Image 1: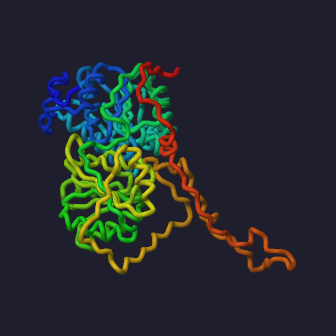
Image 2: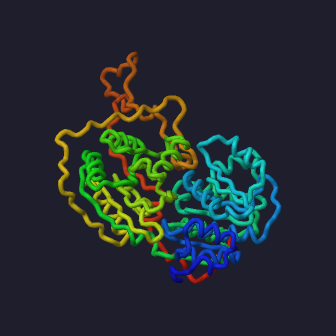
Amino acid sequence: MSQEIQFADLGLAEPLLRAIADAGYTRSTPIQAQAIPQVMQGGDLLAGAQTGTGKTAGFTLPILHLLNAKPVTVKPGHPRVLILVPTRELAAQVEESVRTYGKYLKIRSMVMFGGVGITPQIDRLKKPVEILVATPGRLLDHVGQKTLNLSGIEILVLDEADRMLDMGFIRDIKKVLALLPRQRQNLLFSATFSDEIRELAEGLLHNPGFVEVARRNIAAEGVQQTAHLVAQTHKREFVSYLIKQHKWEQVLIFTRTKHGANRLAEKLNKDGIPAMAIHGNKSQSARTKALAQFKDGDIPVLVATDIAARGLDIDQLPQVVNFELPNVPEDYVHRIGRTGRAGASGAAISLVDNEEIKLLKAIEKLVKKEIPIVTVEGFTPPKKTEPEAPRPPRTQGKPRTQSRENGSAHKHGERNARHDRPQHPRPNQPAKSGQPPSKSNQPRQNKKAKPRMSEAARNQAKPQPALFNPKPIGRKR
């Protein structure tokens, strides 16, 4: 289907066309041109689209059209549409899209996620809501408190389904599905596909339509990808040099760890480059503030962990930098998908240490493209590197856990701190003479830990069958 299809040609209601025009759009993207008519027909849909293709409007617009065409009086706390997403940021942005396109309609929406107080959400649920955008954990919290009833759901959307499975939400998703009426419309959107996504689709979708607008696991064509060989100890100075040399006004930088994000942001601010970091340890208000300031251009640099790799919708973001390469190659695609969105151009730069060469090769194999290694003239590594700052001490007492929206701590439990300490003989219990010290009294030797593959990495390492086959997918009864 051509990219030149106008929104006016898709049969959308006039109030929606007015809102689309207000937002500055006239032509639909390929995913929108294919998905909107199929969703408006009322059937299930399995959609595969790389990030940044405009898929959010691909389901919000036809959903608003359907609700407007069939108005129903709803009770408080009984939504008609449920949109499940993996992260808080994506939840907020999807609901913002609903409000943007539905501003001329009498359709009410609400966003629901963890990390913030639940009382304001309870108060909001006391009023009618047609469209609910939520993360799985907080949604189930409300169901448990009987502040939310899902028996009237007419349309279910699973957005970024692959990310939800990777974050360990499969059990929560199954719990939510058990609360929904059997007769409903189901829409599943995913940027990448694995055997688990196929299994989920087979159990969820009934004779679905298929939409796939790009080959799986590739980056947008408009993104220029390059790499620089840089020692890990010199990367902070190198990033600072690049930003000043090229006079970048807006750049999103991804790091592997929260500690690394904080250190890089501190270094850039020290060098006179305003920067902020967002990650799972930041409060929701701090993350929202940092994102808003970055989008508005108040700060030129945002440093983020992979929690922000999905769903960030920043118009015309010119630069993305991988401070470190991700361990899972698919995350590289999601990271650089923040630039070059909806046909625009962008640049993705990766800083690669010698120990990351294998990761670079794995990424090139996934995207089926060689990423050129470029030398930067004029950068001189410092003779004396900045010493590594100690990590913040962990709080004692309760074991650390992650919220459901920020990771899969419920899937991979934390080790108890006492098991990490070397065992020493007690002062009043010396080893008996003539006997060698017991193994329990000897200090443990540090063994090289085996790398743990994530669930997504294990699935993606397997040969993947074709996403779409001619046989219709039937719902498991």
